[in-house]
Length: 109
Image (cartoon, rainbow, N blue to C red):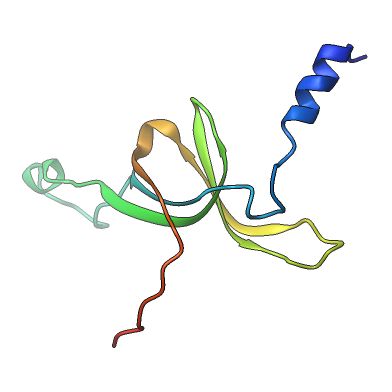
């Protein structure tokens, strides 16, 4: 059973703006493992292994000391509160979080 302070704390967590605009739009740069080639490899080649640098863009729906969750899609139907294309990234893998603002540009070939 929840006491009144727990209920009050939960009500303060409600978004101040409509979904999905209550979450910041971000660009997260993070590091990931990268597989080596199959088959026999020299020790020298294996020692040269690199990490993969990855980028995800979307709404940051959660960030705590363990992880960052970025969601890329949101359904605007009034009765539907579903998102998609989300990724949970361990916080230790995150190199940078940039908060994005609306901007418009041209699509280039």
